[in-house]
Length: 154
Length: 269
Picture 1 (cartoon, rainbow over the protein chains, first blue to last red):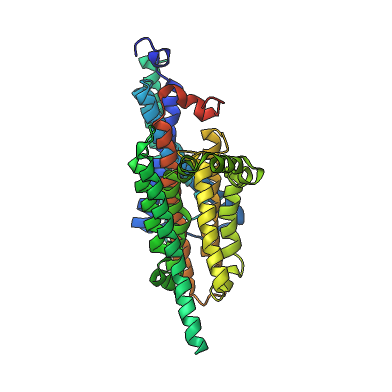
Picture 2 (picture 1 turned 180 degrees about the vertical axis):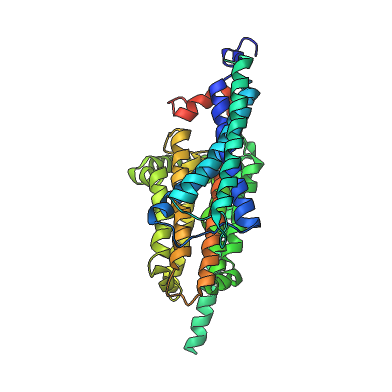
């Protein structure tokens, strides 16, 4: 394998993006399992959602599902080809999670108005905590990203 | 007297799908057994997948379950999932067309090969047309009075279930494009894109049914319709994620140097 040109270098870009997909998928799965199923705070269908929101929700949902599957398989492929770089994958994973959480908190909940975080309460505090968590995850991702760069896998 | 005759005929007709499934399975397993002297052999896994698909289908068309599904929309959705997604996926993994080509004498094999290259088969086995047949068919069934009509019309009822099976099979075959022979050479990216469109349109249909109370005119309560719509939404997710996992597992089993080409759809892949 040492002479194999394919395995002679790691693929930083794909390591990062595969992990971004995985991060998006994991965060979406946490959202679905914790907030839709366990707590039942989110609603499956909010009758106040505009038509455009309902249509784009289908597409987003499909993307989330495929993101987690393709993310895992891209990482497996990279790992088998010895081109996976963990520091970049870590950065991608947290950036994906934080990015999705922020997207969900701002676009899905506020602009598309798919559903609120919780019904029958003032959503402000919930929104602040939700998006605050997103920013923390993004900051962790940025920290890992700078660290990966510093480690010199380029 | 006439009523009695009808009941007997009706009962016989009810068992027809099950009989056909048993016949198909025996034929497949017989042909697979005949491959034991072939140098290429025939993987036992394929026979297992075919039997699994037949079992899932047999459960779905067994008269007691069909009767339940007739009254209960949740039951209908569960059967729909078995007939339209899970059973076809298992059957495609059994590569029945490859087995047919190997089993038939040369002249017959050539005819099947010509049929596979025909414009009609190329058209219906393309991922996009298979998607339209599969999900489009569901939009027509559930968002129009067709579903409630099918509850009172036996022929329509059979035809709809046949459509689920054929369209589901075409879709799984088109997306996987292996291990069975396929008339198309499409990139993995393209097929994943079609799968994305399929999940999106399927989940949109689930939400529309939940929100607007479709199918209508069935006498089911709003709660029943909503429970069925949710089962369709999550059941569809499960089946389509399973299809994506199978697709990417088949990809990961390929030698490392061929994977990149398959991803982008190079001619060699």
